[in-house]
Length: 135
Image 1: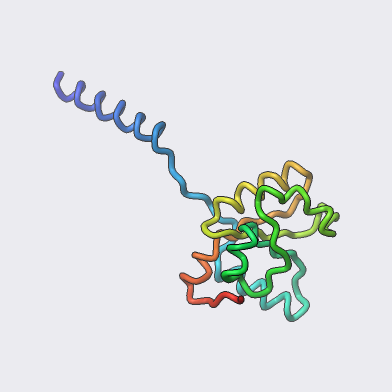
Image 2: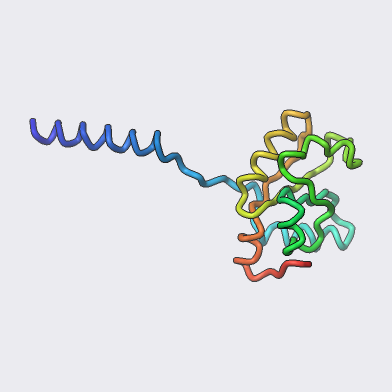
């Protein structure tokens, strides 16, 4: 009987922790090594995509992934058509600092009808792999 109560209590405790402290992890569609490969292939004319930094302009000025096409803060990503990306089939790759804001921007673009939107995580992932940022 004590073991049933103990397991019941532990189950309730685990559920409570899950509810009050949800995971902050965001799944990335591609990782730094894959993005670097795509950037190389784009230089060679083999791939076409738009790479967007969705951090603030202040963060962007501190350093960005080489090959970034534009900087649009995640809360303004709905202005992408006004920035010249009107084709909803264009492959769009987003990144921020950790991947959270790029995930939010990805959701917004998908709701707007863009079909090929990828979250590449963040500049933290880029530098962790040993790649340099541009300034």
